[in-house]
Amino acid sequence: MKRLRVAITGLTSCSGCQLALLNCEAELPQLLELVDFRFFPMACSPATLESDYDAALVEGCLSMPHEQELLLSLRKRSRYLVAVGTCAAWGGVAALKNDQDREQLRQQVYGTDSTAALETFSPLPLNAVVQVDATVTGCPPEKEELIGLLTGLLKGSLPTLISYPVCTECRMKETLCLLTERSALCLGPLTLGGCGALCPALGVPCEGCRGPVPEANLAEAMEIYLQKGYAQEAACERLRRFCPGWRA
Ligand code: SF4
Ligand code: SF4
Image (cartoon, rainbow, N blue to C red; front, side, top):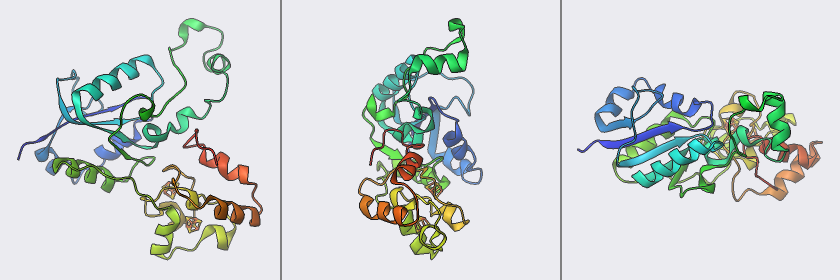
């Protein structure tokens, strides 16, 4: 079988999604037989971009001109471009302050010395600039999702974004509901599933790290938050930590 030619890179991000893939230590030897990681600066010796890839996996959001150039170049060279992780999908924590004045932010970070400042713009998710063929969300995505992405690509198929909320996975695991039983501000009803309701299973409310469910029953969720004594805005603000552009 022909090995899959893949480019993997990170833009503005913590590199956690790429690290999640590198942490698949047990599976990597087998993956290497099937996948040719042609461009993966975090893991391999310096490489330059080549003429074409079967797929480009991009972590992080866009906030610098050179990142935009790299993304456009990868888009041109790759059959599929996949947004990997919450920052690439929604902007993530880097976009948290997008509604604040950029000059003020620059001064807070770099002081008055303008020569030290990097050239940046308000962080954007990848689909604001290029066509994204598939998204694997998560902060970081689950290991199984990354391996599934690569093995699916080998067969020429792309993953589809899960459409149910974290609550569904709590129900499947019979996890105690932290919102209804413990009155905790859990964002599970509004958040995309796929993590196996990891946090509630450990007794920790969901923080919304996988981004919003497009067809969440917002009215019902807000009603419960109100009943539990939380202002609707408190839930919205929390969800915007990972998806800054989200509006109820
Ligand atoms: S604990 Fe959170 S995610 Fe789980 S069912 Fe309750 S509200 Fe939903
Ligand atoms: S439970 Fe919520 S915060 Fe925890 S990993 Fe899943 S989506 Fe992220």
